[in-house]
Image 1 (tube, rainbow, N blue to C red):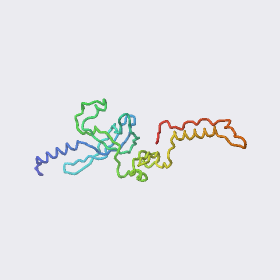
Image 2: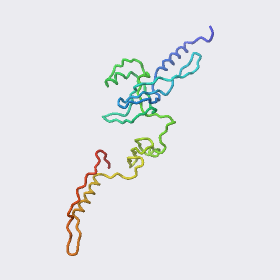
Image 3: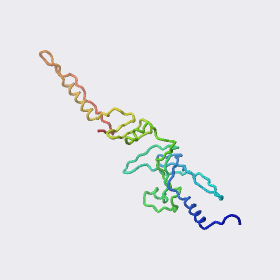
Image 4: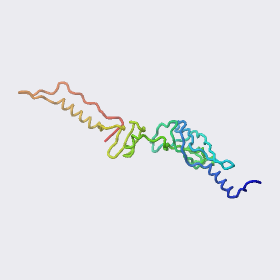
Length: 226
């Protein structure tokens, strides 16, 4: 018999390594397709599995595509924040300690039929992580360091919060007019026009024979400001 005999320690270590290789916690993934109605995505895990051949050589194999992974957008109290994930976007895959099927189907405290722990099939996706090859737009950096930026990266469609300032639009510079103040000023102009007179020698002219109509409201239906 050739070669060194396998020790008990080697057997135990090998068994532990084999078990740990089946336990998944989290890793990056790439969206292949996205279902906005179901809030699920088909995701390709982006870290290959490490394997060792009989002679100790390290090899790698890709993990399988994960279909219908629930996407975890912030949600609660009837409110939700979503955005349109696209193929090629990256996410963090988190693998549940227990099977998710029963909970996802009912929303109730579940008794998972699947007894596997931290299995690759029980994943959820959190849109967040991105590789160094896909940095955020450098032009928005000053706004990001000053406060909160919500909107399309590198575009004008943003809401920016900073100390003493809220901007609707990345390049916004002018202050928003308030409907109450605008309506008041329009009413004052109308009243002045409808009641003004012109003094003449020995007499004063009357007000205009045709009054200015009442101004329509300039109030927005939803947006409020102060």
